Image 1 (tube, rainbow, N blue to C red):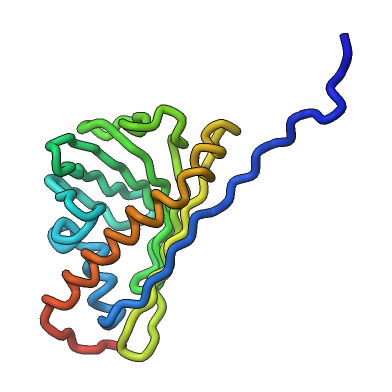
Image 2: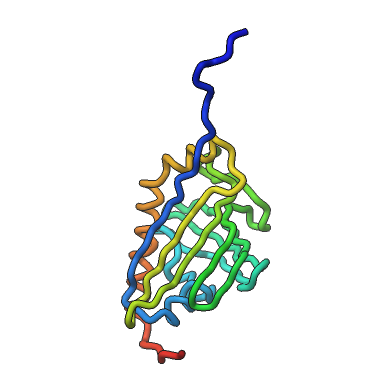
Length: 180
């Protein structure tokens, strides 16, 4: 039996990174990301609504939520926090789940990675806040990594819509006192 001259190389994940500056102080931005009742008001792609959200904000804690699409389809998600550094950084493992919190496949993409490592940085820039989000497949197969790499335009669109909703939410909030 012959050996191929060019054996297949391992697929390398290309992290997805999106950054946006918000016209709001970091304290408010942090609260909007970490308080479920606030998060429910803006999180998800445009047209989606959060119908359930529970959060245990600590390393090892879980955020479990349900997004409802415009056509009524429910998608459950689960974050398991690895790092919580108030007003500076959140790190979690992001996955789709069922309503009981069990790990599931993406409802529309069977080769989507089961888990993504999510790193979110909150940086002050004057009285504004820059949010940088980075997604990287975790424990993924080559096929899952390739699916993820090919999905960057869709992720840009989805997170872009989410960030637009977030900016609109922040504009409606009363000013907060700066605490240092």
